[in-house]
Image (tube, one colour):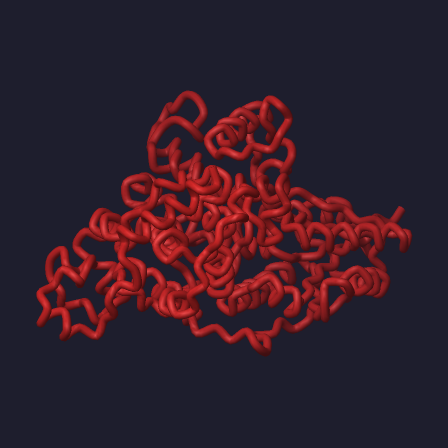
Length: 489
């Protein structure tokens, strides 16, 4: 009997190792002559534009797709690339591809954003109507959203108990080990499609050397981080001038890495640093790996929140009461923030790093987001959108979760009265001003504490700087934000 020929639809999972859909599709094919697996990737510019994909992210997708095509070719798995004019036409396009290549079933890894989930439901329904099968696999997370719940059966809305529940589940199932890459199949005579090097309207200004593409580059970076930096991660992660973070988020976003692979790399590093470690290595051992696991699970937490509370996918605040806040409408302040010309050096450094690298250090992301929502009192949705349009690792769940945390509108949100003092944050995490000097060159010659707040300089020195005055008075801005939130109580 001939095994079924599966079609695997790649999306945000551009890897061959630990790819649940690919692993199961190959297993279903059984390696028999004439069966095989056919891969497909749909270029979807209209969908990407609607969801604010950054040009640097699209560039990383295309370059990672090229590497994936080569790796699949080594397994005799062809990769067919088509363009989908819009999401509504995807079901018919996939059915046509399945019939063309004599595939009787479709495999794909779930995407959990609301529009993507609806699209995938439409695909599965269309395949069923066509007499074909569609299999949706859990891959983007360690645990299927909805399986980690409170004692009352609800989705968690606070991170710490969610993390403890994940640890408990991890132990109860014996871990969630990454899957191996499939073996090569017999050639089936389907030609590979060429991978475009660029798409019209998606030109990135970020040098490609900044973000080497593909699964191989992702694993090189993961291995290097686990070997050299993860032990000190907790101590160094908040200092933007130090290379103390993994910078793996872009590869998680496009799917060159999985959560499972990251967590297992942390476990191995923890055990290597602590021979004979007893107990759960997710919680015990060296603080660095343990804390990094916690950061990976933050990403998982926000995916679960997105599924449990889909309003966060619809430009809605997680806390409905905060929808009543009347945010400022100040285009001049918004433009100054985007350009890194707010007069607050740590904020401007972060915004300029975003423009240069398509990325921003996580501590600085919190600083600039809280400055945007509390000092400028601008609507968090505008800042969230700008980040998505420029971040190489723009991922709705994490980006929305982080912005709503800073705005005090989301889950696990910072209390409305806890507002970062941007100057104190700068002095604490960029003490000597190295980060500021890298991205705000007009301040490079300033010595001492004034690097964090040039308004401290004597008048003559201040006037010589080509640097703006602060947009707002910090003390007055803080009072205004607190009063606005008090009115909701």
